[in-house]
Structures are given as structure tokens and as C-alpha cells.
Image 1 (tube, helix red, strand yellow):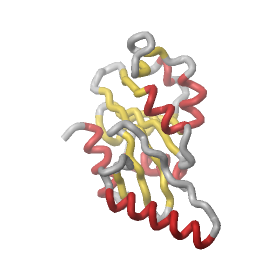
Image 2 (image 1 turned 120 degrees about the vertical axis):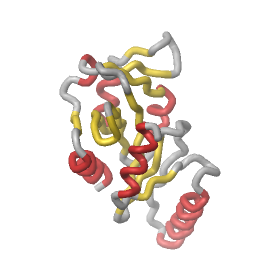
Image 3 (image 1 turned 30 degrees about the vertical axis):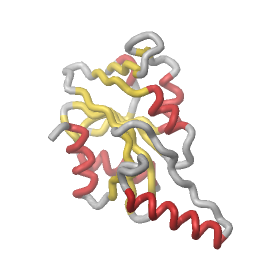
Image 4 (image 1 turned 45 degrees about the horizontal axis):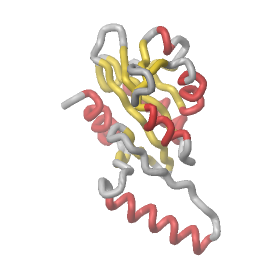
Length: 165
């Protein structure tokens, strides 16, 4: 099982509902969102719904009524190196739910956590792997100095609860 798949599995084993928000990948989520839309029409109070991220590495994560989106990348390199989709981040910036970029390193419970605001501040300095290419090149420690790091499941779940809460 690859590191990103193990990450999603870890969240599910700990009571989080993890789903792919792309059309056709999670019909139950689509139905739930449609139900929310109908409920909004009756109540007159709009609830934020996620847009459709393009990347298969983006998931809608829910627990106890709180929802957020996570974009996850993994690095097996000793020094830490990730390719992060430019389009994925643009899609996430334009949606109403809180979101974070999770950069896994070594295993599914170890890495760096950047919420959407932190990514927006830092991404202006990130370089694309190929000029005008589809991915940012993120290297540790150069581009991640001062980033929140998690080294255990407990630290990871604290970050997730803070984002979604």
C-alpha cells in the first residue's frame, strides 16, 4: 500500500469519513450534498459545499459534522522533495471549505502540515519543476522552514481537528 493510501486508511481507522469529491467517485457524497442543497432551499441558509478538485490526491474529510479538504503528497527521498499540483492548489483556494496541504515523509504519520493561508504565503516562492509546468517543486528544509511538522498520529489528528473545527 503506498504512503498516501495508508494516510487515508489511517484517517478512516480513526473515525474520519474520507471520500473522493470528484463527480462519480463518491455518489453517496454527491447525494448528501444534493440533500444539503435542498435543505438550504427550505431553510434559506446556505451551507458551504466543496468545489470539485481535480487531483486524486485531494479528499473530503469529515468527522462529527466538521468538513475539510486535504491535498496530500508523499516523499520517499531522504531530504524531502514533493511535486505539488499548481492546478490542485488553485482549485482549493477557490472553495469555501478549510483546506490543507499535507506533505508526508517517511510514513503516513510523519510530515509537514500547511493550511491554505500558509500555502498561499509560501507558494509565491516555490519554483515549478519545469518552467510553466503543472507542478511546484517543494524541498525541505528550504521551502518549509517554520512549517508545522507532525511526527505522530496524535499530532496529525490535532492538526486535522484544528483545521476542520
